[in-house]
Image (tube, rainbow, N blue to C red; front, side, top):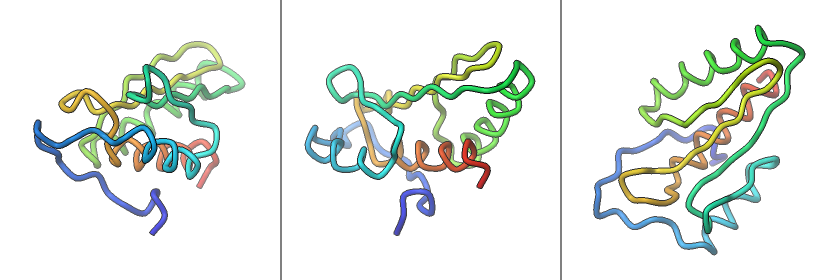
Length: 111
């Protein structure tokens, strides 16, 4: 099943973070995203024509984040938005982060 069709599942504090190898493999399924902080977070920047388009995108991401109960860190301004995904409770990446990245990419692609 494609990542964008999955849903986030609540993870417990003792859930292990994904291994670097697994994170690298999943990252191949979300073009445009990169990993930072020793494969503990996903990041991607998006460009827009103006502030209003960036805000509209951020609002659409917020709707999905609330629905999935998995919230990214978002920085945005005139013509850009940067999304950072990590699972704070496990101090690393979980499949949920990749699911959200795929869903956010769909928003950016107008799907």
